[in-house]
Amino acid sequence: MSPICPSTIYSMLSRIRSKHPGSSLLHIGFYNGFRMFAHAFFLVLYRCRSRGALNVPRTGGVLLVANHQSFFDPPLIGGTLTTRDTDFLARGGLFKFKPFAWLISTLNATPIKQGAGDTGAMKETIRRLNERKAVLVFPEGSRTDDGAIQPFARGISVLLKRADCVVVPVGIAGVWDIWPRHKRFPRLFTRPVAVVYGEPIDTKDLLAQGPDAAIRVLQEHVEQLIAQAESLR
Image 1 (spheres, helix red, strand yellow):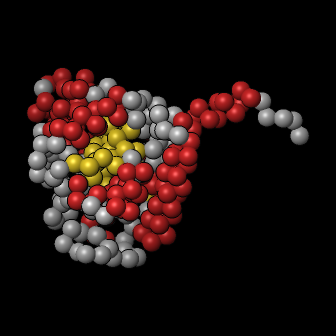
Image 2 (cartoon, rainbow, N blue to C red):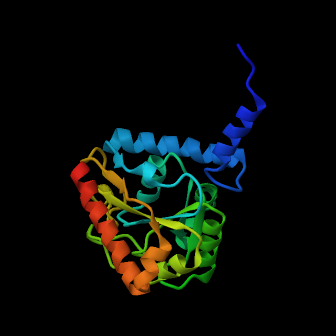
């Protein structure tokens, strides 16, 4: 058996580190171990189906913009996206229980104050995007009450203006059926859940007609992907 070339090892490690620039191999390994668990969880219990994950660029800042149906949305996207580790925003109340706060922080979560302009979280998101990371946001601001997509908040335009990234719209379907916000616990063994990733969009193209048009166009992309995700179910 021929020895492994040092350049091959270096290339392999560089490819692993590119999944989450600036993080240790131990951190990346923990995230991807949890990602495999999440993928198996949704595959076994909810027959998860996904399409278009390879649309997400392997390097560079990526803003993943998705509809928000359930607490399951972040692990569903994280579990189906194998080429990148994702950072995401989570409401501050989830960080009150210290063990859970440690877990989601280790899984790259940033706390945000729901219902208030959280400048710190916005700046942190922009910083991570400028560090060439992939960040997941839910522009509706909170989980849907009835399963339908809600209007996107204007704050998303700030990220489009100030971050060095591309935008990948994401559509999720079926997750509200298993864990709507008025239910304390999720249902098991329901119809399949699905997630569809769209093509990358340059932020300059989105902002060409102004921030309001950018938000409207981005929401239309997500709505189209939700329809595609529904068809996968």
